[in-house]
Length: 341
Image (cartoon, rainbow, N blue to C red; front, top):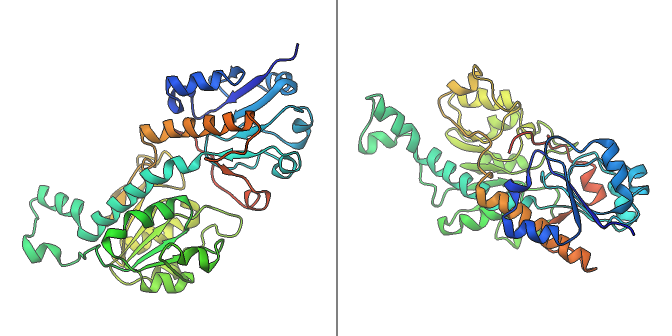
């Protein structure tokens, strides 16, 4: 009798990280769960399981030849939350195998943190705290010479995917004029969210606060560099919340060192950041250790979304919660795989 295998190869995630006991029980009800968490599942084990595998949760490489050996496969769910280049997305589409990611689980916490960091930089909150502790505090108006109110400030959003849309909803009470640069969206989609479509240069020239939520693609690596930072108004705030590779990172640091802009970043070219990296010593730069999305509830949401969609798929219904890979866009993505949870 054939088995019904659910292949779970989730590193750098673990099932305990992304699933509550109740969600894990629902996973186990879908079939015979075979888990590899001490390391990536060995190739010989994957090959032995493929003929009976109906679902894959994880980052297992699935080129066309492996898909040929998995005739019962119904879905692949990437719980690392990036569409990685180790899957033949075109072959999956041809065979009706959805490749999914519950990446939107991180959208709300990242947006919340981005708003907090923007408020900090606009109002000088942690800078004032550091000055006070050093005995260099300034009171009243003198302590606000370089600050501005976030309420009513002109905002630019680069990348209006899940992260950008969550941020847009969070800032509605602040009554900002919001410009958006997103070449993957038509103007009508941007306008429906009460935003103004913009080219990149206009957005940078006119915004006091710029949020970067863009994914890394084959076309946009380092697309914000020294020229683009020079376009920003002096004293503007720049928040890098998606991937370090979308900016020329040294150029961003130079723009902050010069005092032209203030910036915050949750992502870095190399992570963990070396202890002696000079990025740690730059005034005007607010640092976060790639932690804005990694809340406990967000990790559990990854598992909840993945299992809920898998349950639908096993019933012959389409997934509803996770993002589905499109071969044309997945092939252009260049996100660096996550090493730490």
